[in-house]
Length: 311
Figure (cartoon, rainbow, N blue to C red):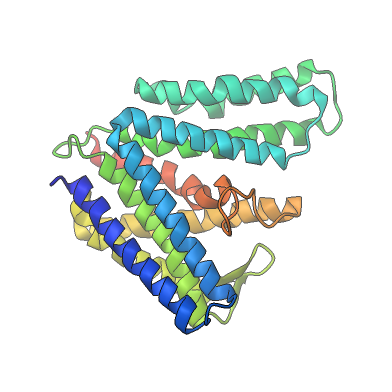
């Protein structure tokens, strides 16, 4: 059995145990009645089932399947981002370019593994072209603010997220044919950190970390969650090209970037006056709510790998 298949089999077994535990808590502790903590836990478990199932299906189709999956994730994320952004008729040309040129072009460049262009395509060329297109509309009302929102949406929803499938383009000596496991490592550690921060926060949380950004996060939850997820990353060293201590440091880095990414995306939501980006998954908001931690972690993880392990 391949390492990837074994990893998914293990994840399925863990989710089965978690689902049974969640059902037992609902039955024994909540006695079948609504309970915010237990219901939230069970919603998280259902979201994990969806994540593992979708990733498993994409992995089965290899590089093409992964690129298509994250293309769709970027598309839905971009749609959610722009749906909460105030735009005017003068922005329509720039928005169309972001959806129908910027998004597919970025993933096409990753598909043909043109690193020299996909690493600068959006932050350089798209960022120059989008204001030009917006200015063509002739609307100067809040021009700088509107343009920045269009650029920022493309940056976080397409450029940052596209660094997850870009991991497949890295040629790491001695690790050939196993790059799918880098995506599994990233997703498990970052999403695991979110879940563990929630768990530790419920158990020990007392002091709010950033009450105006994310009222549910506490210092105790963040410290416990990030530390636990770093240990989890070290335990997964065997699916990576890292030594155990390197896997722990890499996990710590991407957990911290995931935390900062989550706070930044929460700040944007608070600014727009909403709790969630959308309602894609019951109890877990929209697509951006699912990937907000990955957005900041993915580019950093990619470049640490590229400059540290690719010769």
